[in-house]
Image (tube, rainbow, N blue to C red; front, side, top):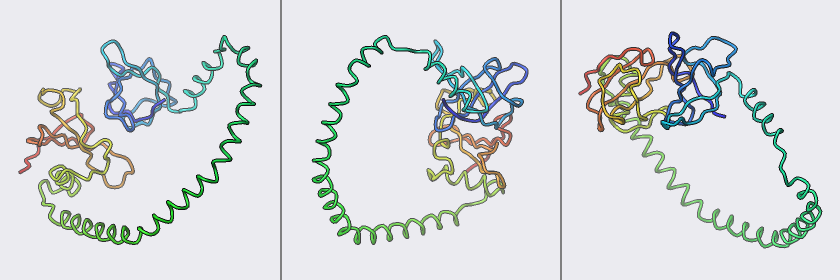
Length: 245
């Protein structure tokens, strides 16, 4: 079972794509596989199962608004399976229980020596922790100073503070607000941008003030390092090319 959000939905053709949590590759889904309690909409959180077709494309086999229904289906399928060797396992359960008791006895004997080793390791760690803490404090202070300098040096390109900050992060290589999503390949499935080879485009999140999720604003760059920048404020429905020095 996986989770994610509806990234694109074509109402007329009855298909869309899911932006998967903690995964770069999107998942295709068809309306026939959807079991939702409300109409399908972009940004909607869903749970789903998926598998690859004969063209190695990820396709959802079931999409729902609750993980409970998927878990119940899985449990139901599991309960139907009865191993052929169930009787043989029952026959040997007593013997395995005796072996387990012997193993537990051996484990208890080695517990004392393990505890002694652990105490020794903790003592050595405490001894060296003072120097390590001092070094870490200095390193954190230096990095904080560098980040403050970088933020101060952010120049105005579009006049939108969030867009300009995202461009600055792209040019300096991060850190990004969504490290598992920002910098991943943009596949241009909608065909809104000029056709290029796969991997040419990459996308980055532009935070939207006042909302707790990624929102609909993205910057898509072309080339590596980037030579062209595009802005979309409606989740890939339209793009505006930015003049970035």
